[in-house]
Length: 548
Image 1 (cartoon, one colour):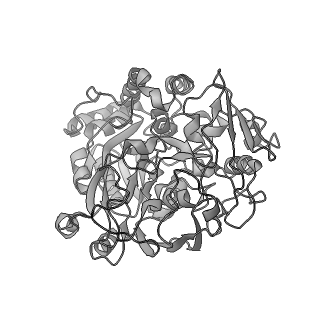
Image 2 (image 1 turned 60 degrees about the horizontal axis):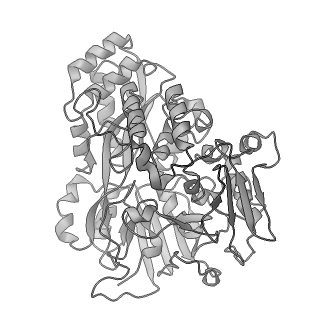
């Protein structure tokens, strides 16, 4: 979510197995916890939200038709029914999905939920448009026509409010479509909700909590939904806390110290603990700190539609000379140097060597030679980056490096909260800059959403920052993603095909991947640490928070 998008979703978290209650410790219901974020969510409106900072609160307030098991580790990637009574029934040809909405659901404003509210939420997400809307427009019959304005509804979705039955017709089989239905962006919202982003007044939803008291880029609250108690959806915790206060400050040092000192309760996993205090964390936070691996890829995008990175040689120069060890040090040791788009925890991650040499051994002279050979030496380059640490430091290093190998690079640093929507605006046509992807669901096709063309390259909220339009990638992703007989649960049967595609992508040098991240799971001594799940998809799973 970014999915961390920053921070996105779009990898399996390999942590200790979840203990629903701490061994030998008592927990209590109710109370308040404070979560600190270094970056504000892109929006708290589910129809717009596409970062991890937004997903954490949204998954408590907007339960989709399908969702994920609220447990740690790879088991958290298992789909379970959300507002649907069961997982969808899929036709023999893989092109028709049928599911039924639970009876008697109500929104957090007390209004009844109908099957058609699901259709309305999908339509709204396409019109905003949500950054992942291509998951629908690429697959659902009639959705492209609706998104473009040439149709008044999505012909491929029918909803019967009397029976609760929802039928979705796909253009072709798509093995990961179950996962698409688990995005909170497609969770039902009331009809009449404006077809525009409502960041300070997100719509009512169905979930244990609702989001309120929003002060943009400063704070918001997640409070109990008074209508939730009657829902009792199996597998979805009702949450123990009465209130979760979210506070936003780009000073990640102060944030980490506040959690270490127990004046706040949760440090955002998508933030990096600064090197200046990292050494003291294990001793000061004994029993409430872990370093957690999560499937994510951090990279510098390179715009293939404009100079200098329209040249493959110029892109290769970046990959050959990039000092990934230096970047890892800037990231407090939370990054493993890498070169491939797919991280190790995702099926299809290449097991062979990087195509342009050992990523831990940069070749500066070779990079300089490639820049000269490309004919792009001296080209002005604007490097886009965020303000927060260590992302600002990553961009500082990257800018200096680009100058070293022969470009004329300068930085353009903008506010964290607006960074991804800004670089996702095609009118700005950014040349290069920082980006990352955290899995939305445990399938390689999720990571390839940042490289496929067509509807994935949107005029706003674009995720394909490199603007790659490679027919080999487009065709292979469509083929692999459309295999109905290869759902997410059976990806191992096509692992070699995904691996071959990722090796091809690395050779084309479309992105300068510099590392796979691990993340800090850090909480106060007030929180039941063993019960709190750092989830494969959600990030921190707020529904598992309990006070001791």
